[in-house]
Image (tube, rainbow, N blue to C red; front, top):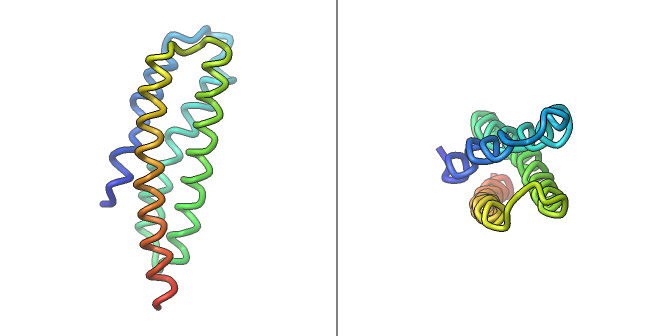
Length: 115
């Protein structure tokens, strides 16, 4: 299994939403949870598909979810719904996942070009 998948575990992102007010359950909490879960599930599903072209489509979706998570982290910080330490920790994790995912994407793209 690719290294980006275990790194992108949504557990820490979901845990960071536990203390949110109930009024946010279907707003920002739901958005963050869905985006954080979308990253590893799309990586796993993409790597299970036949051919690099099919895989790249799912990795594109995972990449979009990482971008969405970046914005939600920024928004949460602006709304003071994250401590600076929480934001640094979650952004570090998101950034590491992005680097690994980009490396996986480049590898799959190279395979697609050579086949």
